[in-house]
Image (cartoon, rainbow, N blue to C red; front, top):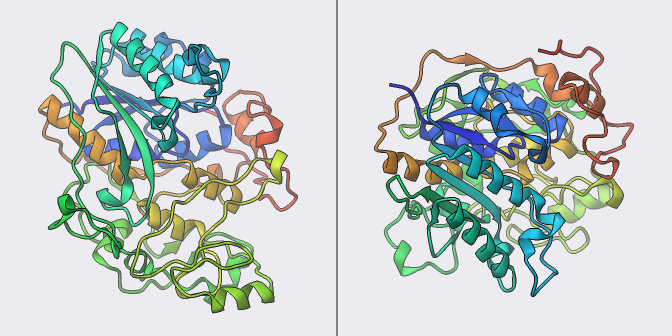
Length: 437
């Protein structure tokens, strides 16, 4: 039996792609503007063609070519929205919201059975609701019902050890069965207030459970210069064992990946100053360090929202990372990936700036999986784990500079405006590019 098909229109590094694949979908194409993100997506999803262009430039025929003769079941993605200042006017006409328009354009042309549009929580608040109403009216015009009331979903209610709230707009064609939002599966660990509706649900994994088996990076001098090392892992929690691939997750229907479970990746160390280390050491778990304003993670609670870094026009800073619950330092990219729900085979760019940007901008896979499972129920599809396993891409893809990534996909090195590209002599470069396909 063929797996249902889906398209990711704003793929990034692939958080939603992975969630839909884990639910039982084939992601038959991914669209992403940033060539560095495209390279990372290609590494993690070598079976998914990547269209490295703005969604605004993608024609429906290009996507239909990737789908072949199969029925397209879902189009999903998170188009950026910025034009909320023109109150009293048609916000959908604001050029800054053009990517939402192009999401609508492709859904109307491709006519999938379902769509999922993800965005920031603020899009559902106050005057921004006018914009959402315009979007819903346009979807109705194209033949789609939108599930109302629309909802903001918190990743910690779906098995992720992180407080992360995102708006999900769910729609279904009038000719297919209706869709429902997923119900919470967990409640935040160590929460001060617990809703009566959540009583009886298991706690989400804690920060301590997510990180407990990861090697102590201070024991590996190589990680001052590299992001990967052969290492000794500890005893994992149930959550950690699943992400390491030591325990079968009965609800994961992704293509199995081949990877070295003794390889610690995404763990390049940060050179903190002695005063910073002393301040971090004195900060109690669950408290904010007074100078950096970084939160020290509580091992018995969940992580605060992981965010992306700033563009070069604002200093190209790595995202404000939480302080490790036990060590006087900020967390690594791998530790952030654990707190986001990424399996250990999934890798980000080797630089901390790109790596944290890719995690901070992505949807936690377990949250995306919960949404995708609702579509499978509506389709009345019983997923199965595909065989055989697949090899990950060439690891050199993870070290591409912007220029190298752009050359691979045949696009301009300025596809991303210079203000969004980090200019740093410390950025890792790869001298040998992977041969373009």
